Structure formats: C-alpha cells, structure tokens
Image (cartoon, rainbow, N blue to C red):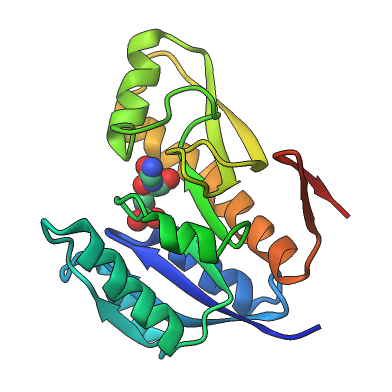
Length: 207
Ligand code: GAR
C-alpha cells in the first residue's frame, strides 16, 4: 500500500493538528505523512505547531473571490501531490472542484453529533453555545467525509460527550476536544490511510 501524502487545513489553535502529529509520532497512524499544513490565517498557532515538527506550511488568506481562494488551495495541493485532506478547525467551505477531485478523501471534524448543531454558521464556539441553549444532555464530535453539503457528507466516526450542569461554551468545547475530537480524528485518518473506509450509498463501512 502506498504512503498517503496528507494536507492538514487549519485556521486557529491547531489542537486537532497536534493530535494528528502525536498519533503519527507514536504510530497510531501509519501509511501516511503530513506533507503540508495550510492555514487561512497567518496568525494561527497551528502554524507554529507544524514548524516545530518540520512540516511545510503555507498561508492562503480568504479573499472576496471564493474561486481565487479555492484555486490557490488547489494549486498547493497539486504541488505537494496531496492524496488526503484533513480539515482540522478550517473555518471555510471548500469549493466544488476540490470536493469533486478529492471525493471521499477529505475528512472534517465537527464538534457536535451530526445531524445536530451543524451546517452553515455552526462552527467553533457557536456549536457549543447552541447545544447549551437547547439544553441537550449529550453532545460530542463527528468525523465525516466532505461533500457539497456543509457538514452533510458520509459519517465515519462519532463519539458522545456528556454535558454537565453549569458548563460554559468554553468548558464544553474543551471537553469535547479532549474526550472526542482528539481521539476520533486520528483514528479516522488512520483508517483512510490504510484504505479501510468504504462508502456505499453515503454510508461508511469499516473493513
Ligand atoms: C475544533 O473544535 C473543531 O471541531 C472546530 O473548531 C475547533 C478547532 O480547534 N471546527 C469547526 O467548528 C468546523 N465546523 P483546533 O484549531 O484547536 O483544532
């Protein structure tokens, strides 16, 4: 099996990127290599994490022209011969041509149990605020393939996290990351690198 070239797309702190780097270092992910960390934000701490581990980085800032933004991303993906894309706290929606070219090769981690609290406008802390406002008792995280619908692609892994009375959005975000995101994102990436994910009629099976 060939080793997959991975691009991790980030916009912020990069704790999910860190979880992936750690998983490579202790061989919880095999058959892959983080070739590039691409950030939409020049000040993202994720860039520092990548540099510390000698991973190539680049910054492509979102501009008004969505096509130009996507074309610039696509150019980098081609330059690095990327096989797999991971959206790890990347706060933008990818254009159709990237999704088409990388069908069932793009992972996204979302901080809720899809189909709850997801879709356009649900990102970062907003997701946890919405869960607390609704009063749900259980939330969690989802890793899914990216398709043309925001947070609507085939679901790969999910993990539930209990909401505790008195939780703030910040506390809940931290617990969802620690108990769910940092676990299931590396796990899903390992499954994809090792060609163990099969998608049939939008349903993911693990072989
Ligand atoms: C994570 O909680 C991730 O699930 C969320 O942003 C945070 C990024 O943290 N992503 C979304 O909301 C995308 N819809 P990180 O930069 O520390 O990995």
